[in-house]
Image 1 (tube, rainbow, N blue to C red):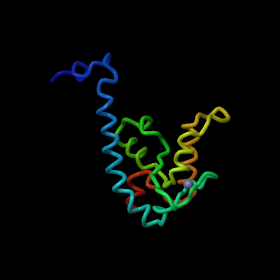
Image 2: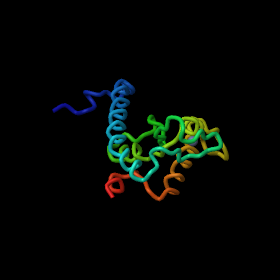
Image 3: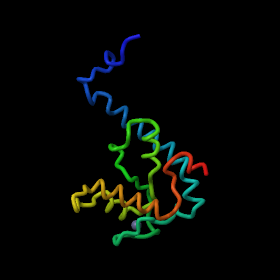
Image 4: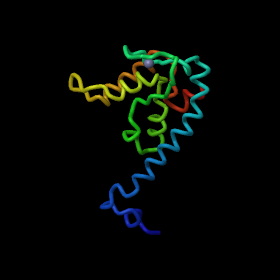
Length: 136
Ligand SMILES: [Zn+2]
């Protein structure tokens, strides 16, 4: 059997990036299907959990907002599953605002988004962060 390095030369970094992206999209499709019933059961599927000043509430389309942008998800299977599950329900306005938080106090916008979403998850006392808690 040939070593992996010969099949996927390290000098060609990025060559299979489209496959990784596809894998994350597939992963999220699976996770979304799995976690949606828990949001429904906890009565938070049809509400915006972020409730930022820009919130447009429940009237318009709600989405899942991840603590991490997909490009920042772990590549490792289990860590990636947890990244895929670290989500809140947010209206389009709040989701957009979270995605575009400016850098502040030495924290990047991405870090602030991650912390804000984690705080919301911690505050609701229910999460689908890990498979185990999702099955509870
Ligand atoms: Zn909102």
